[in-house]
Length: 222
Ligand SMILES: Nc1ncnc2c1ncn2[C@@H]1O[C@H](COP(=O)(O)OP(=O)(O)OP(=O)(O)O)[C@@H](O)[C@H]1O
Image (cartoon, rainbow, N blue to C red; front, side, top):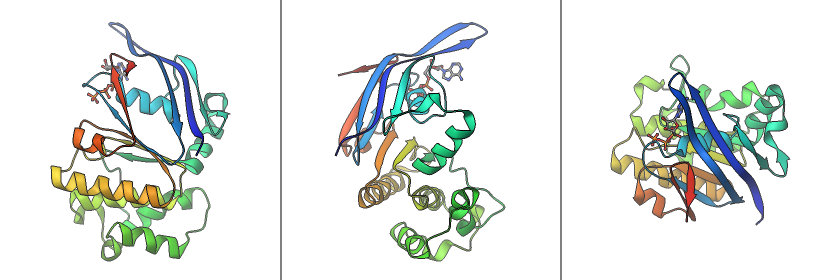
């Protein structure tokens, strides 16, 4: 299928009042289009930092990230924001839905921000797959955790990203709901040909991935 993302010798050091914290120490990774990657490792090993540097959320101290051959960190902040909105989708542990908007408006928000039209048929397809058809008029506070995360996934999918980055997407859900939600995320991304990169503590979830990336002390171990 070809490479969609390529990270070359990434270092990330956080400067703190108590000294430098080396979170990533020379990480290189080739991500194939349409595959499901799970990033696993102990707490503090550098998983979230890796996800953030791969997705343009946090500039590495050293090294480069290419997406579709484009050098991500050569973009201006403004161009980066547009690139992220167009090509990347995000799902976080905290669902990050806006309380004052109903589910439908939450789901359509990224497209509206990008002045793109909502494709009604695709909206129906996505909300159907995620079992949200009868929740669209509801507000986030009226939904269960699993429903909120499904709404956050619908918001991500509707923008048709090429790559989906998910940081502990099941971390706030009970085991059964978490597995169900991840299954749906995986099914949808497969159906729409998207690449999925998930940080997880859950080894059951990691086992479903095409590729497991194991991080220890800021390095990939094989
Ligand atoms: N903003 C920050 N400032 C300073 N140090 C940080 C910052 N973010 C992360 N770190 C440190 O960098 C290292 C890697 O953190 P990171 O959050 O990437 O790990 P993680 O594997 O995702 O952990 P967890 O599973 O607990 O979420 C840790 O030592 C952490 O304390």
